[in-house]
Length: 305
Length: 305
Image (cartoon, rainbow over all chains, first blue to last red; front, side, top):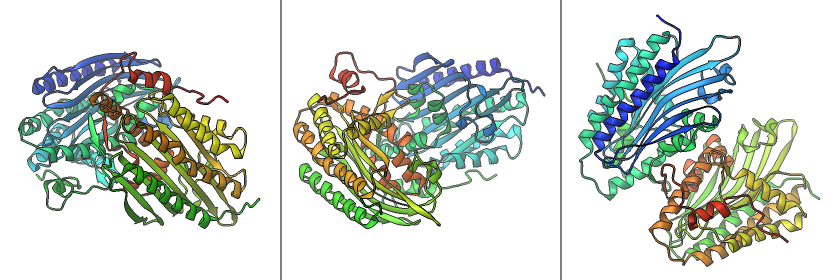
């Protein structure tokens, strides 16, 4: 087992992952594809932002690579070890949010990241984090099962309880306290991963990064042609409000980006293209919209056996 | 000078202010008027929320009265005296945000509030806060001047520097750091006001509350019939995104409400009805949209002499 962190290898993997994901999404979309913006950060580092707007299948898809370094690690970067806040750091990651046009296709988010926190005279501390989660507007049990089965398969080589642990962490993390409501049907979330040593931890991050498309694309393909009308569109725009609320009020990655002087347009690329807020709206009981709340936005084990 | 805080008198004033403001706004709107929801909070207190949605002039107008008490004052309630955090408290206020339909009519926000922080064996600590600010989509110098002149006139009886001080505080408070951009053309913001004694401080809060309609309605009347098209509407929806970003990332009142277990639907009534986010959008130089950034979203003294 090799415990020495190799930043360049992680960087190369992340750039390749961004390429693979964009290529596949652009191919499914069938439109003009992604625009790329490379940027540099005054305080150090930079990134490669890619955005697809107003596509055929995807109304907005943002897939960001960033590699920033700074002199003071913000507290939002590591909840588990607040004593590291204030250290010099390097942070590398790929982060993406996909907002499809058709309300029957769920929104998805994925992120894989690597942190290195340094202090003169002490050994560097490093860790991996990441995961993915799914946010349907109209729920399909078989899609939720497929999503979680793919997540579990990616975790399986790393131990029997890995999926269960990171599935639960995801449920806890993607939760809107002020709504008492999960963001969606969850998936995986992990952070502060270093206990397996560098090689194995890095392999796990790759397993998560590499399985995202396997988890998401079959669902996109299956739902993207379903006919919908104003009612479904209205519900989608309303539910997108929850996504905005989560990302701006709770999301650690968003807050880390804004606090660390990140590139605002890249960070807020996660926000949906068109959103509504309606006062105190509730779905009518017995409708497909109510079913989302009753059957999907509740803690559930999506796979048994 | 009477320094003894009279909570019931403040409460009565605030309920009357909510009535006056709603009556006037409904009259200008000419539609179905406000719906009212009274609510109680599990942890203590309650409120009277009023919302006008899909009106003729106003696309969404929320005017809230709330009176909550709790056992632990959240840190967001007083930035100036963090030592009060954790005390028992009462918080009363009226808070409103108006989102007009016509992009030539600016969005406005006003708030007046009273806090009482108590601790067994110690004298209660009280203070007033409040203010109002204006967020145009298309700028009119005469409107900005009228808005600030009205604010200054309300402050004048309370001292020569009162307007200047609270105008500057407003500029500092309603600022989106991650955009390096003010929310609008400002107005007044004050907090932790108790140095004038209770009677005079309360009179000041009333002067601010009472002058809000004088500041806002003439601007609404002057701009509400201007013809507009898709271009102006698109710009309005895009700029509304900044309002969401400010309220969810920075606004102390919103964070106080969410942290203190407030009523989510009332707190988030401030969010616009329909919003867009576009990646890295910039107005074309020389357009009216660019003028908003160049001439209005900059620190300015709107009234000289």
